Length: 532
Image 1 (cartoon, rainbow, N blue to C red):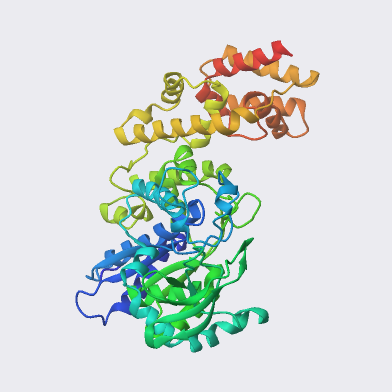
Image 2: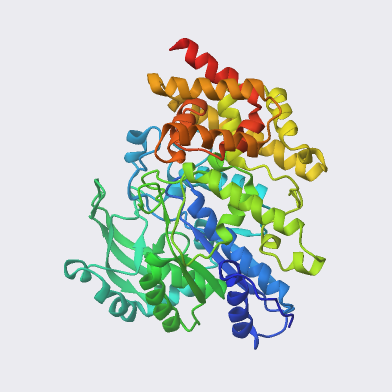
């Protein structure tokens, strides 16, 4: 088996996990594939936390293949579209029209967006659109098709035969008032189409049926009162979440799956059910949650988080892949305003990758998990995304030729090769989108006080008289002004950020003014002084 050089803890985890997988499958018969799995519940719009559940196992799969185990691998993305809708996500259109379908499988609810055959079909379509540009190799499996095709039948019969033992496993995790009525099965009511409202009253393993009544109230929906006996096969029933997880592990013979740390107990319980069925639980990897700007868990049901479309509007897709490669055992904030910093972190990594001393060093770089056929593999410029964003903000224009002329004037290296130029142009487009959507609408014109006007006038005179001043010379002049007017020279910077950028903080001003050019900044400050 190939060895992998030591890497930072933040990036080495896929290889650590791959070694665990290799140990697990060492005794498999030749030709048996190693199964990596990920799940997606299409009950709401996919966000980037959802994407991590596909990309991260793909990193472990890549590492496993790099180690040279010589076994075929598959990555299955399992879509639980038989799941009943529990509530209407807050960010959905036509919420009232969707609410009448509460309790029905999401694969049997009309698409509220009006463009797909079903509610779940729309969500799966969004997932597919996002996964396309990241070039991850996966197989899509739909729960509804697995139940309807009979592929789950053997497992369903086993669950029916062991329903009492399964109830004993699950009961201690339930509230006392729910234990007596809990069943591993959820029949689909043939009268009203709900699946969350049915209550199993008797089991008949010999004919693979259950008796049930449609009487439960769930999320504002009410059962229709139907009673009858029905097969658990042919998509006429599904099993409850923890048993359902065990069922797919059993039938698909899953070897490895990542899941959020909030599902650790569910994974352990599902593993016990799987052993009862005669299977071996997959290796698990519980990861930390993604947090929004308020520190809350990202949630698709209430619309928190970043969508795939938003990410690709404000950042290259490779930055997302890089972000998701960082240590999953650490909680990370994932919201739109944090994206610029992630872009600059990625650019630093890309520069290091291009500067690697050998092909072998590059092959063992964390970016080998991230880069794809369409990726820029080098970035020879010192340009930062923050700097480009501030340039766009200061120029206050969407004139791409003008912005590009400033960028190339600041750093001619951006055109030194096609890959560096391609990345720089992508940064410019993302910065324009970010500015139009967030910066420009929130900009506030600052009115300087009398004492501040004198400081600004002095800076204008210096910039006008020194159009070729270097970034260091400009920075030195700003510090001189700070020393002349404040007890600490750095106290002048908030004033300049408010006036030049319309914000409280920003980049190193010497470098930024050099990028925007002293003439442009001098004119901008002069215009503000003349208006006030």
